[in-house]
Amino acid sequence: MMDPLAPLLNLTDIESAVKGARDAVDGAYRHPSLRREGGAAAAEIALRSAVASASLDFGGYDLELVRAGAVHDGGMQGALRLSEALPTLASKWESAPRQVLAKLHVLAGTGVVDSASLGRPSAPLDQVCAYVVNRSGDPLIRAAVVHGEMLALNPFPGVNGLVARAAARLTLVSSAFDPRGIIPVEEIHLEREPEYRGAALAFATGTTDGIRSWLKHYALAITLAANSVASSPFART
Image 1 (spheres, rainbow, N blue to C red):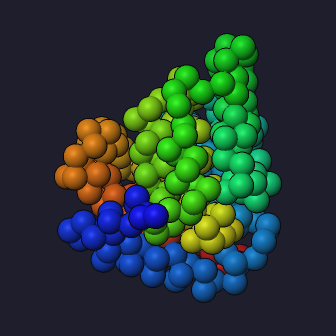
Image 2 (image 1 turned 30 degrees about the vertical axis):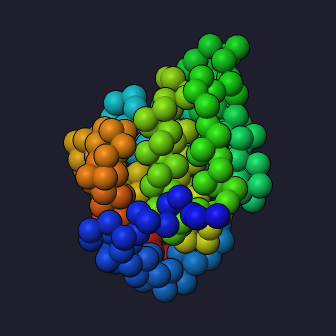
């Protein structure tokens, strides 16, 4: 049976972009503090990623206020709950993605959306789950497609962006592309927000050019995030 995502690697410039991203991630993992499970570096990256993801959907948040525990609104709290749960959920992602997505929705949506809708996607996620279970395509491409498909389908209104970005992160972690979850790609999505949103809309068209645009954005975001974390002070803690 043909892998439905395999041909995407053959789109113009995509194979080289994916290779560049992989090389950058490998470079980040050469730092012992980033390879280490837990610790200050991992906690800092998780916090920054959560703040960036929440900022994309609910407006900007001040990192230091969040760090101090002074931000209590539902969107930020949902992002923090997701960040805390991701290491545990990663082990279940490839075997039970539907159940994990329901859990992500509960974590992100409590206090934000109607409690009766929690854990109940409003759009079918069969194809997204099939990509995950079948480990379709290159891991980076799989993560990008899962992310893009979920943004396009909007199965979790109100917190869909949070859930989509968490699902993409789970894909990178569970595939061992980024096994410790140390690549803060959410920060790059936020820094390049117009491109992030434009490329996501292009992907939703389903055209070859639209899909290529999204994959190029995603690979570049991974590359920039990996380079950023590798050169940061907490990479040397």
